[in-house]
Image (cartoon, rainbow, N blue to C red; front, side, top):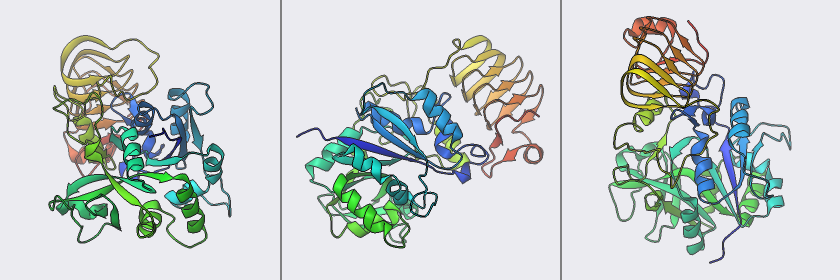
Length: 402
């Protein structure tokens, strides 16, 4: 089977309102993750590791942080079809911001026509997961599909919060319902239903026709709510089972089909905890399928003295006579003598002062945490000085110094 020409469109305009204050100055895809990455690095790495190098990133909300990250971390060489290019709203046809996922692509329809791909991959930038996109493309071609939708099997009892795909025995989609009250189970597994992951493959001509038709009408201009449900009766639309995706280098102890929407503070923190331990649910140490990012221009981490257990430590960080357990330290972090850090996420270039005590804290970049301060022990005191999430996690916004 001939290797198709593939263009990837990455939708990276999400606000991430439930991640506030981490999204106070940046959009959700730009939020740091795992000590040295941003959330968007996962989807970009999936494409590059899948040998797909033509990547347009559509940005919108508070995009400067993301733009700077992509400029510094993602350079794919000088070949004409190897690129990561940032695309802001074009403000065409009435001068509006992106009105939905489909409108975002429609405003840049010239990119599709100019690149002339066989297949267009439209993926979100908000999730933490590994995926070999090439396997989904092979499925798409084998089925002779016009559209393929990446689908994650979820328990029927939890399926009401997703876009649910009903399929036949051949995985052809028969209906696509957004957050149904009665989700349709999978044909071979009545306990689970197919949830759309918001990742799509389109044959180019099918996509162009659908975008032009959608733009003529008053709709939500959204792939999941409008375009794909309307095409299901008329086109060959298939569900690709994400659990069938076999990523090289994944260890037997890792969670099968690991995928997280880190859309809340608690989910974001829990996904970090999934990185820890001798057998993490998601092991970032996978040379066969690395999560790619720019190297840190600083020294190696330094552990001068202390008690450090079950912790990820970024480049250039220093721990001097402190206790750090079940935590993730970003790059250039300093944890000084007598400090205690427990079940926390400490982002780049933050200083944890002597005798400070942090428990279940998310400290954004460039913080200076004073000597002797206690955060995470007294919710009422934390609520007065910091951002206290309903989960009980305490968040220090970027650059807070008090």
